[in-house]
Amino acid sequence: MNSLLVNYIVLFWSFLLVALFMIFLIRAMMQGRFFVMIIRAFLFLVFFWSRFIEPQKIVYDEITVDLWVWTTIALISDTHLWVFKDQNFLQKVVDRINDRPEVGIVLIAGDLLYNPTYNQSLETLFAPLASLRAPVYAVLWNHDVGVPWDPFLRLPLTQALEAHGVTVMKNDIIWINNFFLVWMAPYLSNEADVSLLERVEKDETVVVLTHNPDTITNFPNDHADLTLVWHTHCGQIRIPLLYNLLRSYIVPVTGDFDCGLTQEATTRLYITPWVWEVLLPMRLLNPPTISLISI
View 1 (cartoon, one colour):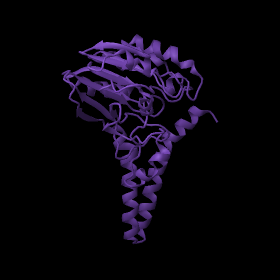
View 2: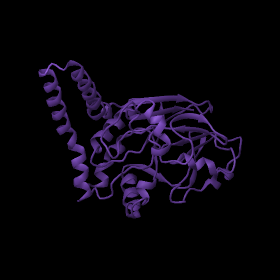
View 3: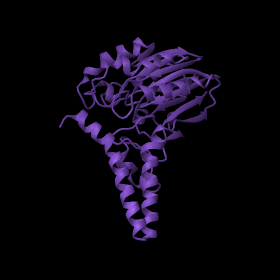
């Protein structure tokens, strides 16, 4: 079956489930089975929230890391634009970033697409990025460079982003807003050049942007003051207790990484939540998040 058709089926099946939930709820009510009715009502509310409410609820995650640079980074990750969410939701994210005047730089942290068979114009899909007020930088990751698909999207995706004023980086170092920003290419395709950290002095302020937190296990030194990553998605559906039991099986990393700011052996590590969905158009206890990092 055509994968695009499958995506649309997954997107719209939830409307059928809402109707079925209502039928089962009314049936329990008519039969006087009030305990069953309460259980079904609870399950219905959880489903309705995670399918229709929380995926549209954009929040900020605001953290401070004392690097004495006096700027704020807006970090978004794993946009995975495709059938579930398109440029209309991206415009909402852009508007929320523009609502924060303290933002001095915007970083887009890879996995911009999900399904490469989705034939919508890439320039149209990413057009909202042109209205961001702060300088915008992006790094591509496994869904953008051919892991697990053929790498035919790398060039057109780069061209589409650059057409909207986005600087696409790969294994490079730039000086911006009084700190060094180090970009490392995809880890899963063996392109990440961790030796870049040997080109900066230990007393310099260094922020690394990469995708997979496993990258830090190969850092040659501790020159990175802060490393910004994503990839784990911080869990799309975080059911208490159950998520912790299953995290090592469902989070796509080899290290013990999950979410938030931690102190690791070679760097302070911040794993950002994400703003889109994959596989299912649902979220629970992990709303779409824009990270605002004051350094």
